[in-house]
Image (cartoon, rainbow, N blue to C red; front, side):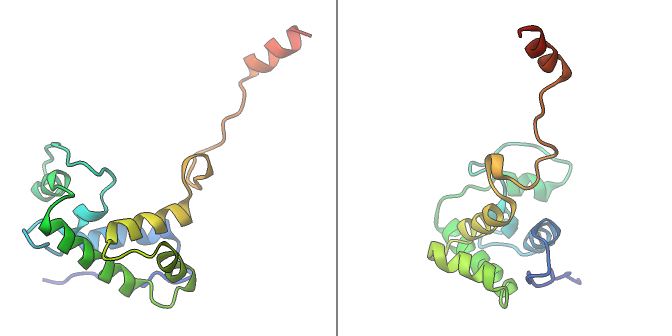
Length: 143
């Protein structure tokens, strides 16, 4: 079986291009209890019972973020993440700044928040909210 490694997350690589390949890579590595390591970096903290056609996707969505297996898998994800950001001084500084200890989920989320933003500061907003023509018309009529 051939596993495609994600490229290193260098200063020249965009996070939105790199994240899917890193998640797919984690999906190929079983954790302590056999759950693919991608469950560590999934969006929701709580496991969700969503049945998928893909058994592994269901397994990933249902795996709990508590317990001994989670702690071990979380530390392993941090090691893997750290390996792929070597040389990216900005990403390395982010992980040093939050001073995480064995928490790959927190490290991944910190990188995501830094590069993509959060809330109204998110860089992946489709377009800013603009007032509709009706709002402008109402404002003009009130003058």
